View 1 (cartoon, rainbow, N blue to C red):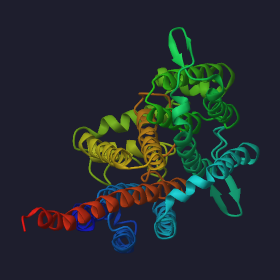
View 2 (cartoon, rainbow, N blue to C red; view 1 turned 45 degrees about the vertical axis):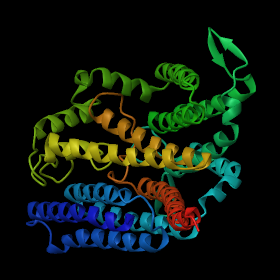
View 3 (cartoon, one colour; view 1 turned 180 degrees about the horizontal axis):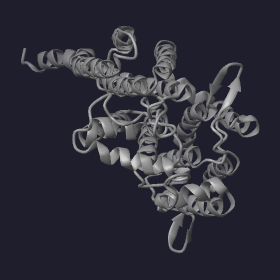
Length: 448
């Protein structure tokens, strides 16, 4: 039933993808060959194959996750191709890698709850990835942000994979300690508090996030990691005390970074008023706001926005990564941008529904943590380019250009698929057993 529903949901995805790629190709047809349509065919082939694999390996998985993700990934590749066809080729390669990892997890990690036995190892690996980035990280664009590692000819962003590993660790740890974290042994200013020793994890994750902020010179990863942690603690305990303490701690860390780190100070100042230096330091944000405003209600049309200068360079630096939402808003308008936001809302909703439906604490917290990550990452990047919050420099899940991002997001998606498959399989099994037991119960109740 779920896979038939998924196949039906893929129909609008296929139609929108075909129309989108045709529109982008038509706009660039004077510059490149019809071979560009191969991206569309490749994309469709990938997700048809994924659907076929899920029919066998996860027949009861949520039927909406893959169509939503497919449409997001298609929109991303279309816009990246619109900006730079060579980047679209690289993104298509990383999409294949991400789908390959997704498939491997679905096939070989069906009993994902075994991860609960290795949470400390996974947590240590996640922390080590951050430490390696801090020590040997590279600043690729001269912004002062050190988030990347060069391994041979490949550039990766370890923090993306660290996010997944630490989420798995937190799910296992909080599942074990949630009752202790929910107890009250003392009060601070009238606020009920747990035993002091159980505040250690909160302070540890805050310390890691603060260290990332100071040593990597970037707001995004540290805020995302700490936000995921606070959301998962609240989901585990149901107590607002932890998020409240967390907000105080991260505010203190942010205030300290504002006065001590030049890049944090700059991003906050540009958020408050980008027009004071709109032709230099505030240029990116100012052009982003112009692009979003230029899109109007229905946009200029795919391939028809003023995104590229006559020499082919993007008007907005980092257009294919941090500011891809601005490009979508200009060419698809308020309607298209709102549609994209709705897709992310649906993705987060399905993730939270999977968390609510799961029948064990580890699965609940893991699904909740992944969904919180998707929601926060989307809010941070869209809020930044729209001047709702300071720029954070993270990618839009499944849409922005970035190999590490798309691969790690597909790994997270695979875990959501496995959790939903297990939950729905157990429900189907229980319903089937109830139907089989009903005739026997009725027969036993008849008079002889």
